[in-house]
Image (cartoon, rainbow over all chains, first blue to last red; front, side, top):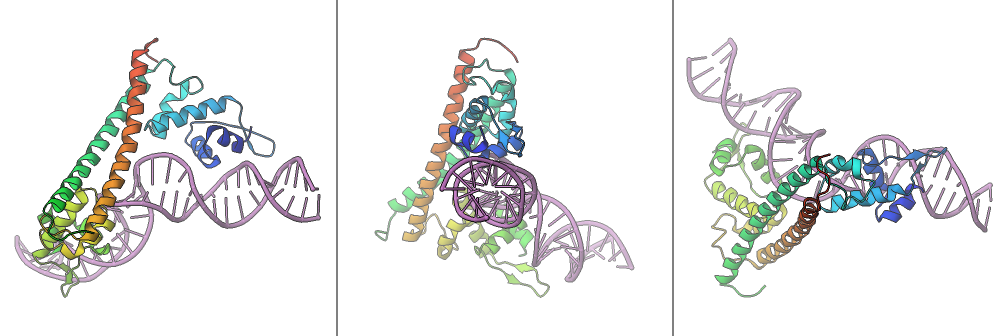
Length: 123
Length: 123
DNA sequence: GTTGACCTTGCCGTTGGCGGCAGGGTCGGA
DNA sequence: TCCGACCCTGCCGCCAACGGCAAGGTCAAC
């Protein structure tokens, strides 16, 4: 299959697939005319990549999972490296969310105070 | 006072202050030699800006609060525009946090499953 | 033979709040 | 007289995952 088909099959875009290739996450054969050619395994592989990305990992993180990207990632025996990376990323996400939640709460509190001590009505 | 002093007084950097000025949030007189010169009110103003930024607003959002940046922002009668902007920003923050939390939970769930369904150690 | 859908590489733009550097001018003090 | 600390403008870099466009090649169908 060619890049457009793979994109459709995986619910992404050709642009993204080239991006993954450049990031070293997928590879491709080339037809005589230079077109990228993929086999069925690519669908699984890309699906796994998308899954990991959706879980908040970065492309860089995903690289660690390269050895097991062709199987069922969710069911695969987790590698220690993979677990470490995932845990670190989880910590990063938690810190980021905490910081943003803190800001959000400050804003919400300011709003409550503003509306509570309301002098002039309506907006 | 000059930009370095103002930076120290407000716990930020000269670079950031120039950035705020370019964004139209603060203004400055110029000395004969071209140096920026600020008065005391600038300290309050920058403090208010920093406060709003810390609450998750963007520089663009803060611009709406320009008219009341020289007073006590927290105690000021809230302008309707300000409230609207703050509410919209709050919604944006909430959406963003929700999206990231969702991703985080997916990752956490995957990790629980991985560790729970552990078969082969190490990789 | 030519349209049109597909593919290629390459490079800039996006979002946000600055950091950092280059290449210069301006002071005060020793 | 010269050092060092401060200031200026302007512009690229950053982080992330692509989007979009230019400028071209390829191929099947009509």
